[in-house]
Length: 279
Ligand code: UTP
Image 1 (spheres, helix red, strand yellow):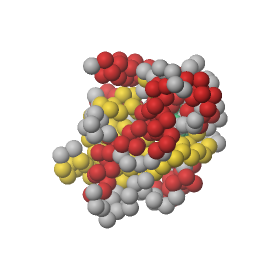
Image 2 (cartoon, rainbow, N blue to C red; image 1 turned 45 degrees about the horizontal axis):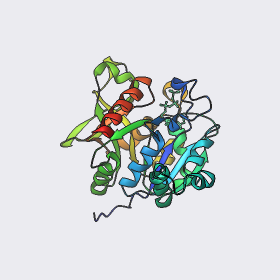
Image 3 (cartoon, rainbow, N blue to C red; image 1 turned 45 degrees about the vertical axis):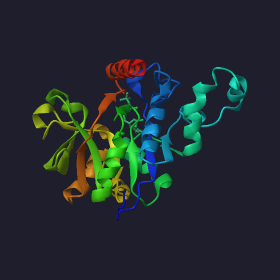
Image 4 (cartoon, rainbow, N blue to C red; image 1 turned 90 degrees about the horizontal axis):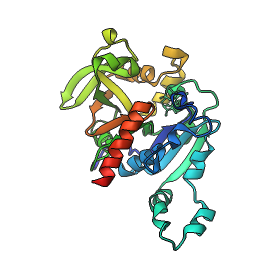
């Protein structure tokens, strides 16, 4: 599509969290490397970015996350072992991703929250709009990936876009929740955002999920954002500053989302993708 706004070329994956809800599995393995069927969560996320024509992948890691770098690299020994055998096809998808994308990494030295993790990625992003994917929110947009849907919306409006979904009211305490006016079907101009509100204080039941398109002024805003709920620098607080200037859209994406940061969501995703692979 022709757009007067800068193209989204980079996708940032904050992947430095401790993943405590998956201990002991995440003691030595990053949460983002847990597999749904045979693919790690992070690989699904990178495939979604590529489906949105984004092939510059920037990953914020932390201590104990080296498996991520090894995954997006060629394993010569393994390739040599299975070359010419019936098992060669198992590596086709990941090999193709490695060829089509570039990967760069930086470390979040202290885990001070998602906002802080995104700020740590500034060195990899520079001064351009970019996408953010939280790989533990696994999305299936079927023929049209969730990030691709969001990029289309960004190309029309040129501002920050957050993905939202309706959640049961009693679950608002788990999410950032928006208030806003619906300007076209499923698209809201955001006027307020609250991080993890009690159901009684939630401005709506429209919850932000782990997909964002951010304009680069967000970095300066995060730098000025004080730690919020849980003592962490919340990305919701920073995006709220843009929303106050009318520069944030919330988009009710088409597709399904699984909270793979929780055991229930992970099991649900596994069953869903298994059923899909069998059909
Ligand atoms: P979560 O809060 O779901 O991840 O953060 P967590 O802290 O790893 O998980 P639990 O609650 O302890 O089980 C959402 C995303 O933000 C990243 C995480 O890696 C995850 O992808 N994150 C969070 C960071 O990169 N740095 C942080 O300081 C916090």
